[in-house]
Length: 93
Length: 296
Image (tube, rainbow over all chains, first blue to last red):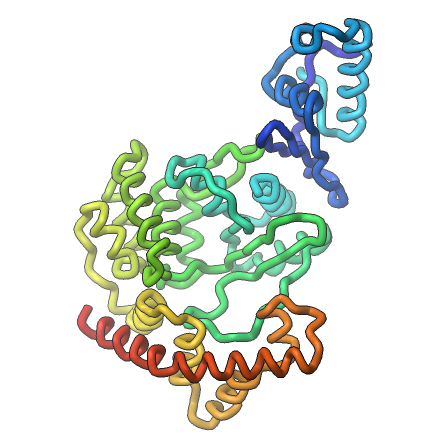
């Protein structure tokens, strides 16, 4: 089960400019910035702002009324899992 | 650029190296400069550990940018690193022009006044707003022959005067501790702070500073100034280097890594004719700066 709240990890640096986000794992010497655009940038902005996963899904459902809720839940969870695997997000404690 | 700033701060801290992010996004975050886009990140590093920071960054793929070997009036004060996949360069300063006290004394004073500033979602180490305004002021003043720098200095002075965390007495205290009493005069005057007395220990550094701060043709003045400070026996080789630079220097200077021999020859001739044309102006600028220095 996906935890309720995620935040940028302690070793992540990020900037948000012009609807895009660039996120870097400072702890990995070979890492390059990950560029997020569109929905990815929106999700990052909300996560960095401390929005819970439930609220994140609700916000996406409102922004994309034509998309099935289950599709949005799966997309958000996949996004979070991917960034967590890259050590850019960690569970809020 | 803020990402690169956070990166250098992280690398320095993880190696136990004292370093302060200066100018750029930090200056903006402290309300001392409007947001702007720049191509480099500036860091002031403990002079004794600067090579260690370069080494640590090299482990992450950052490499020294070769310089063009032209002497500058102020001498070398920073090393520039670049990375094949990052769009900005890192300027690692082991000293900062305009602070006439020894670099280690200056660094200790600025380090004592450090604060943390949020940049790229991280807390990076930086000078406090008063110390940072002194650094920014010196950065503009050293090129005050440029109208753009005059505008930037005016804007900085207005920001300093309105800043809730900066007192005029702070500026004087920092300037006295770092040998910037005279070099910072244009900022003091704009902020309405009484200019402190000059420190006689730094007369030679002040002469150099005034040459830089009042010259418009800095490359020609740089060569001429270097020439006047060299012993006579070394002047011919310096003169030759100025007139006919090595191929590597030319390629770096003009950012033409693949320039052919024929293209290099053309670059040399253009440079020589421009240099000769600029010499009288450079000589006048040098004389004028030195007269100005004697009057102060």
